[in-house]
Length: 145
Image 1 (cartoon, helix red, strand yellow):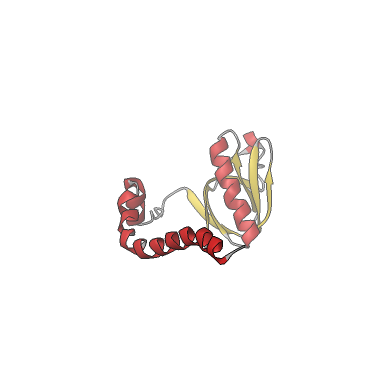
Image 2 (tube, rainbow, N blue to C red):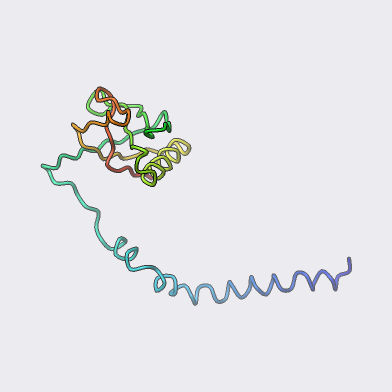
């Protein structure tokens, strides 16, 4: 392959890279302008704090087992909440939420990260296989850094 032919192949890529380096920072302001208003508002809004009388409880979970069943997805925490609650589950009747929750659980398990789980202490998920003695339906889950 001749040197001339190599330059014909490499030159367009080189020009594209150099243009990207030159114009990228100049156009970075466009990223904030094109972002949807909901995303901008979420970045500005402070995190909501739970009221002291809120029925919702919080548990920081180190997942040691994640499973998906026909009726639910669940995680088992290494340390229990409320001395006996090892499992937290989401029903698969809401498939989109179950997929999001499963994604958070699997990511946390794979990366060795903790998950903050929001749940209602006395709630019962026995309708979808979450035993009242050691499991609670979760209201929300977030992957911790």
